[in-house]
Length: 138
View (tube, rainbow, N blue to C red):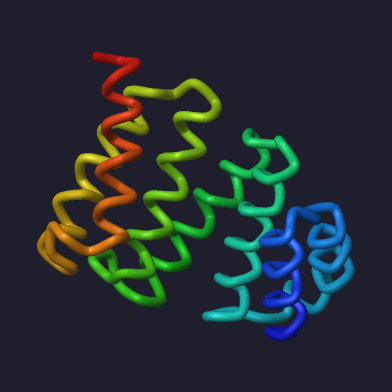
């Protein structure tokens, strides 16, 4: 199952999210019996895939679950949880919930800066997304 989740990610990376969704849909019954890291990876992969298919509202539902799972599994201030929260904030912005996205990104950016430093590329991606949302919302 982990190999299939990874394979779905490769399809997403080369612009073939329909193929990724096919894989994820096929392994979903197996995932229902899993917990921990495998379930977390699956939920995040579904969120990414649905987002790539332009189904942001559905993707946000999976992102919310992914935040809960990564926070429970890795801790709320972990790299994994913060990166998943950034993904969730991006989806919030995509569906027009800009103030929520902005608030979440502010918190994520502060935590990433403490954890990774201001010059880390992941912190930079969060800063860039926050700047884009702030440009729209003021």
